[in-house]
Length: 313
Image (spheres, rainbow, N blue to C red):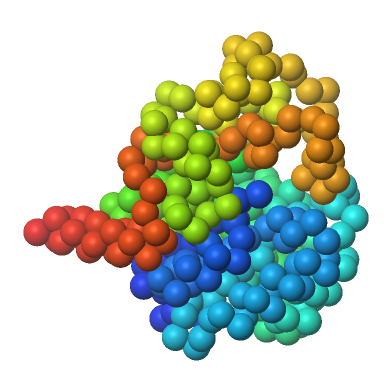
Protein backbone atom coordinates (compact mmCIF):
# COMPACT_ATOMS: atom_id res chain seq x y z
CA UNK A 1 0.00 0.00 0.00
CA UNK A 2 1.33 3.42 -0.98
CA UNK A 3 0.37 5.17 2.24
CA UNK A 4 2.16 8.21 3.70
CA UNK A 5 3.67 7.80 7.14
CA UNK A 6 0.79 9.87 8.52
CA UNK A 7 -1.57 6.95 7.84
CA UNK A 8 0.68 3.88 7.84
CA UNK A 9 -0.40 1.54 10.64
CA UNK A 10 -3.08 3.96 11.84
CA UNK A 11 -6.17 2.45 10.16
CA UNK A 12 -8.09 -0.73 11.01
CA UNK A 13 -9.27 -0.93 7.42
CA UNK A 14 -8.19 1.16 4.39
CA UNK A 15 -11.23 3.43 4.44
CA UNK A 16 -11.87 7.16 4.37
CA UNK A 17 -15.22 8.47 5.61
CA UNK A 18 -15.50 11.02 2.82
CA UNK A 19 -16.21 14.70 3.48
CA UNK A 20 -19.86 15.41 2.71
CA UNK A 21 -21.29 18.89 2.32
CA UNK A 22 -23.74 19.72 5.13
CA UNK A 23 -23.52 16.13 6.45
CA UNK A 24 -20.07 15.65 7.99
CA UNK A 25 -19.50 17.30 11.36
CA UNK A 26 -17.32 16.77 14.45
CA UNK A 27 -19.42 13.87 15.78
CA UNK A 28 -19.04 11.92 12.53
CA UNK A 29 -15.33 12.72 12.26
CA UNK A 30 -14.54 11.75 15.85
CA UNK A 31 -16.60 8.55 15.68
CA UNK A 32 -14.86 7.57 12.44
CA UNK A 33 -11.37 8.17 13.81
CA UNK A 34 -12.13 6.33 17.04
CA UNK A 35 -13.45 3.39 14.99
CA UNK A 36 -10.21 3.25 13.02
CA UNK A 37 -10.90 4.97 9.69
CA UNK A 38 -9.89 8.40 8.40
CA UNK A 39 -12.67 10.81 9.34
CA UNK A 40 -13.12 14.03 7.37
CA UNK A 41 -15.35 17.06 6.85
CA UNK A 42 -15.58 20.01 4.43
CA UNK A 43 -14.27 23.27 5.86
CA UNK A 44 -17.34 24.97 4.38
CA UNK A 45 -19.66 22.96 6.60
CA UNK A 46 -18.76 25.62 9.14
CA UNK A 47 -20.05 28.86 7.69
CA UNK A 48 -17.14 30.97 9.03
CA UNK A 49 -13.41 30.54 9.43
CA UNK A 50 -13.79 31.12 13.18
CA UNK A 51 -16.30 28.29 13.24
CA UNK A 52 -13.84 26.07 11.39
CA UNK A 53 -11.20 26.77 14.03
CA UNK A 54 -13.69 25.88 16.77
CA UNK A 55 -14.53 22.56 15.10
CA UNK A 56 -10.84 21.70 14.71
CA UNK A 57 -10.23 22.41 18.39
CA UNK A 58 -13.23 20.24 19.34
CA UNK A 59 -12.05 17.34 17.16
CA UNK A 60 -8.46 17.53 18.44
CA UNK A 61 -9.61 17.58 22.05
CA UNK A 62 -11.72 14.46 21.46
CA UNK A 63 -9.06 12.30 19.81
CA UNK A 64 -6.08 10.47 21.28
CA UNK A 65 -2.90 8.97 19.90
CA UNK A 66 -4.61 5.59 19.53
CA UNK A 67 -7.20 7.03 17.13
CA UNK A 68 -6.92 7.36 13.37
CA UNK A 69 -5.99 10.77 11.90
CA UNK A 70 -8.58 13.16 10.52
CA UNK A 71 -8.84 15.29 7.38
CA UNK A 72 -10.33 18.58 6.24
CA UNK A 73 -11.62 19.24 2.73
CA UNK A 74 -10.81 22.60 1.12
CA UNK A 75 -12.54 23.84 -2.03
CA UNK A 76 -9.71 25.25 -4.15
CA UNK A 77 -11.80 27.31 -6.54
CA UNK A 78 -11.99 30.98 -7.43
CA UNK A 79 -15.51 31.17 -6.00
CA UNK A 80 -14.24 30.36 -2.49
CA UNK A 81 -13.29 33.66 -0.79
CA UNK A 82 -12.37 31.83 2.43
CA UNK A 83 -9.62 29.63 1.02
CA UNK A 84 -6.67 31.73 2.23
CA UNK A 85 -8.06 32.20 5.75
CA UNK A 86 -9.24 28.60 6.08
CA UNK A 87 -5.85 27.34 4.90
CA UNK A 88 -4.14 29.47 7.56
CA UNK A 89 -6.33 27.88 10.25
CA UNK A 90 -5.64 24.40 8.86
CA UNK A 91 -1.90 25.11 9.04
CA UNK A 92 -2.18 26.51 12.57
CA UNK A 93 -3.87 23.28 13.71
CA UNK A 94 -1.49 21.14 11.63
CA UNK A 95 -4.35 19.10 10.15
CA UNK A 96 -2.80 15.72 9.22
CA UNK A 97 -4.57 15.28 5.87
CA UNK A 98 -6.01 17.95 3.59
CA UNK A 99 -8.44 16.89 0.87
CA UNK A 100 -8.64 19.40 -1.97
CA UNK A 101 -11.31 19.60 -4.65
CA UNK A 102 -12.35 21.73 -7.60
CA UNK A 103 -8.82 22.81 -8.42
CA UNK A 104 -5.31 21.68 -7.53
CA UNK A 105 -3.07 24.48 -6.23
CA UNK A 106 0.66 24.11 -5.66
CA UNK A 107 0.40 26.93 -3.11
CA UNK A 108 -1.92 24.84 -0.94
CA UNK A 109 0.38 21.82 -1.24
CA UNK A 110 3.35 23.95 -0.23
CA UNK A 111 1.63 25.21 2.93
CA UNK A 112 0.45 21.74 3.99
CA UNK A 113 3.82 20.14 3.28
CA UNK A 114 5.42 22.95 5.23
CA UNK A 115 4.00 21.69 8.53
CA UNK A 116 4.28 17.99 7.63
CA UNK A 117 0.75 17.29 6.37
CA UNK A 118 -0.30 15.46 3.23
CA UNK A 119 -2.65 16.45 0.41
CA UNK A 120 -5.09 14.20 -1.45
CA UNK A 121 -6.91 15.72 -4.43
CA UNK A 122 -10.24 14.78 -6.08
CA UNK A 123 -10.05 13.93 -9.79
CA UNK A 124 -12.54 12.52 -12.28
CA UNK A 125 -10.24 11.90 -15.25
CA UNK A 126 -6.58 11.45 -16.16
CA UNK A 127 -6.16 15.03 -17.39
CA UNK A 128 -7.11 16.46 -14.00
CA UNK A 129 -5.02 13.78 -12.32
CA UNK A 130 -1.89 14.85 -14.23
CA UNK A 131 -2.45 18.49 -13.26
CA UNK A 132 -2.79 17.55 -9.61
CA UNK A 133 0.30 15.34 -9.76
CA UNK A 134 2.24 18.24 -11.27
CA UNK A 135 1.05 20.40 -8.34
CA UNK A 136 2.77 17.97 -5.97
CA UNK A 137 -0.18 16.27 -4.25
CA UNK A 138 0.53 13.11 -2.25
CA UNK A 139 -2.57 11.26 -3.35
CA UNK A 140 -5.36 11.25 -5.91
CA UNK A 141 -8.99 10.52 -5.10
CA UNK A 142 -10.35 8.85 -8.24
CA UNK A 143 -14.03 9.82 -8.21
CA UNK A 144 -15.53 7.29 -10.58
CA UNK A 145 -19.02 6.81 -12.00
CA UNK A 146 -21.62 6.11 -9.33
CA UNK A 147 -20.05 8.24 -6.60
CA UNK A 148 -22.25 10.51 -4.52
CA UNK A 149 -22.08 14.26 -4.99
CA UNK A 150 -19.85 15.65 -7.72
CA UNK A 151 -18.78 12.57 -9.64
CA UNK A 152 -17.13 11.49 -12.83
CA UNK A 153 -18.46 9.25 -15.57
CA UNK A 154 -15.56 6.82 -15.98
CA UNK A 155 -15.68 3.19 -14.94
CA UNK A 156 -13.42 2.68 -11.88
CA UNK A 157 -11.42 -0.01 -13.69
CA UNK A 158 -10.54 2.45 -16.46
CA UNK A 159 -9.92 5.45 -14.18
CA UNK A 160 -7.64 3.72 -11.66
CA UNK A 161 -5.68 1.90 -14.36
CA UNK A 162 -5.09 5.10 -16.29
CA UNK A 163 -3.99 7.04 -13.21
CA UNK A 164 -1.67 4.25 -12.09
CA UNK A 165 0.24 4.51 -15.37
CA UNK A 166 1.85 7.77 -14.31
CA UNK A 167 1.15 8.25 -10.57
CA UNK A 168 3.00 6.31 -7.88
CA UNK A 169 1.52 8.07 -4.84
CA UNK A 170 -1.54 7.13 -2.81
CA UNK A 171 -4.62 6.32 -4.89
CA UNK A 172 -8.08 6.46 -3.36
CA UNK A 173 -11.21 5.18 -5.10
CA UNK A 174 -14.70 6.65 -4.73
CA UNK A 175 -17.83 5.34 -6.38
CA UNK A 176 -20.60 2.97 -5.22
CA UNK A 177 -18.58 1.45 -2.35
CA UNK A 178 -20.68 0.36 0.62
CA UNK A 179 -19.30 -2.88 2.09
CA UNK A 180 -16.07 -4.42 3.29
CA UNK A 181 -15.94 -6.62 0.21
CA UNK A 182 -16.22 -3.46 -1.90
CA UNK A 183 -13.20 -2.09 -0.04
CA UNK A 184 -11.22 -5.26 -0.79
CA UNK A 185 -12.25 -5.02 -4.46
CA UNK A 186 -10.95 -1.44 -4.56
CA UNK A 187 -7.62 -2.66 -3.17
CA UNK A 188 -7.47 -5.45 -5.77
CA UNK A 189 -8.14 -2.87 -8.45
CA UNK A 190 -5.04 -0.92 -7.44
CA UNK A 191 -6.38 1.64 -4.96
CA UNK A 192 -4.70 2.09 -1.59
CA UNK A 193 -7.76 3.47 0.16
CA UNK A 194 -11.51 3.25 -0.36
CA UNK A 195 -13.49 6.50 -0.17
CA UNK A 196 -16.97 5.89 1.30
CA UNK A 197 -19.45 8.74 1.49
CA UNK A 198 -23.07 7.67 1.08
CA UNK A 199 -22.66 4.71 3.45
CA UNK A 200 -21.54 7.13 6.21
CA UNK A 201 -24.48 9.49 5.56
CA UNK A 202 -26.70 6.70 6.83
CA UNK A 203 -25.13 6.58 10.29
CA UNK A 204 -26.38 7.89 13.61
CA UNK A 205 -23.56 10.46 13.93
CA UNK A 206 -24.03 12.19 10.58
CA UNK A 207 -25.74 15.57 10.32
CA UNK A 208 -28.27 14.16 7.82
CA UNK A 209 -31.93 14.44 8.71
CA UNK A 210 -33.95 11.36 9.60
CA UNK A 211 -35.85 11.78 6.33
CA UNK A 212 -32.58 11.78 4.36
CA UNK A 213 -31.38 8.63 6.11
CA UNK A 214 -34.72 6.91 5.53
CA UNK A 215 -34.62 7.78 1.84
CA UNK A 216 -31.17 6.22 1.55
CA UNK A 217 -32.37 3.01 3.19
CA UNK A 218 -35.35 2.83 0.82
CA UNK A 219 -33.41 3.69 -2.35
CA UNK A 220 -31.84 1.44 -4.95
CA UNK A 221 -29.16 2.26 -7.51
CA UNK A 222 -31.85 3.11 -10.06
CA UNK A 223 -33.13 5.88 -7.78
CA UNK A 224 -29.91 7.87 -8.25
CA UNK A 225 -29.92 10.57 -10.94
CA UNK A 226 -26.71 11.94 -12.46
CA UNK A 227 -27.18 15.53 -13.60
CA UNK A 228 -25.55 18.93 -13.87
CA UNK A 229 -28.98 20.54 -13.56
CA UNK A 230 -28.80 20.98 -9.80
CA UNK A 231 -25.29 22.12 -8.90
CA UNK A 232 -24.14 23.05 -12.47
CA UNK A 233 -21.53 20.29 -12.27
CA UNK A 234 -22.32 16.62 -12.90
CA UNK A 235 -23.43 15.07 -9.61
CA UNK A 236 -25.58 12.25 -8.28
CA UNK A 237 -28.79 12.93 -6.37
CA UNK A 238 -31.72 10.95 -5.03
CA UNK A 239 -34.64 11.05 -7.45
CA UNK A 240 -37.21 11.29 -4.65
CA UNK A 241 -35.56 14.41 -3.23
CA UNK A 242 -35.62 16.06 -6.67
CA UNK A 243 -39.34 15.39 -6.92
CA UNK A 244 -39.93 16.65 -3.36
CA UNK A 245 -38.17 19.91 -4.31
CA UNK A 246 -40.61 20.38 -7.21
CA UNK A 247 -38.19 19.36 -9.96
CA UNK A 248 -38.76 16.94 -12.81
CA UNK A 249 -35.82 14.50 -12.87
CA UNK A 250 -36.39 13.94 -16.58
CA UNK A 251 -36.39 17.64 -17.50
CA UNK A 252 -33.72 19.35 -15.44
CA UNK A 253 -32.18 22.56 -16.82
CA UNK A 254 -28.85 22.35 -18.63
CA UNK A 255 -26.47 25.00 -17.24
CA UNK A 256 -24.42 27.13 -19.62
CA UNK A 257 -21.37 26.96 -17.38
CA UNK A 258 -20.42 25.71 -13.91
CA UNK A 259 -21.37 28.00 -11.03
CA UNK A 260 -20.21 26.83 -7.60
CA UNK A 261 -21.20 29.87 -5.56
CA UNK A 262 -23.91 27.79 -3.85
CA UNK A 263 -21.09 26.00 -2.02
CA UNK A 264 -19.35 29.12 -0.76
CA UNK A 265 -22.16 31.69 -0.61
CA UNK A 266 -25.48 29.88 -0.19
CA UNK A 267 -28.82 31.63 -0.56
CA UNK A 268 -31.36 30.40 2.00
CA UNK A 269 -34.28 31.41 -0.25
CA UNK A 270 -33.52 28.78 -2.87
CA UNK A 271 -33.65 25.01 -2.84
CA UNK A 272 -30.01 24.01 -2.82
CA UNK A 273 -28.01 20.93 -3.62
CA UNK A 274 -27.20 18.82 -0.53
CA UNK A 275 -29.55 20.83 1.69
CA UNK A 276 -32.96 20.31 0.10
CA UNK A 277 -31.88 18.01 -2.74
CA UNK A 278 -30.00 15.08 -1.30
CA UNK A 279 -26.91 13.51 -2.76
CA UNK A 280 -26.28 9.78 -2.94
CA UNK A 281 -24.07 7.39 -4.84
CA UNK A 282 -25.15 4.16 -6.45
CA UNK A 283 -23.84 2.41 -3.34
CA UNK A 284 -27.32 3.00 -1.81
CA UNK A 285 -28.08 -0.46 -3.16
CA UNK A 286 -26.05 -1.81 -0.23
CA UNK A 287 -27.64 0.32 2.50
CA UNK A 288 -30.53 -1.09 4.51
CA UNK A 289 -30.00 0.31 8.01
CA UNK A 290 -28.67 3.25 10.03
CA UNK A 291 -26.00 1.95 12.42
CA UNK A 292 -23.60 3.88 14.58
CA UNK A 293 -20.22 4.55 12.99
CA UNK A 294 -18.58 2.06 15.35
CA UNK A 295 -21.06 -0.63 14.33
CA UNK A 296 -20.57 0.18 10.66
CA UNK A 297 -16.77 0.01 10.81
CA UNK A 298 -16.88 -3.27 12.75
CA UNK A 299 -19.09 -4.63 9.98
CA UNK A 300 -16.80 -3.34 7.24
CA UNK A 301 -13.80 -4.99 8.89
CA UNK A 302 -15.65 -8.32 9.26
CA UNK A 303 -16.82 -8.21 5.63
CA UNK A 304 -13.34 -7.30 4.42
CA UNK A 305 -11.73 -10.15 6.33
CA UNK A 306 -14.38 -12.65 5.22
CA UNK A 307 -14.01 -11.65 1.57
CA UNK A 308 -10.23 -11.99 1.82
CA UNK A 309 -10.55 -15.45 3.36
CA UNK A 310 -12.95 -16.52 0.62
CA UNK A 311 -10.52 -15.43 -2.07
CA UNK A 312 -7.58 -17.08 -0.37
CA UNK A 313 -9.59 -20.27 0.17
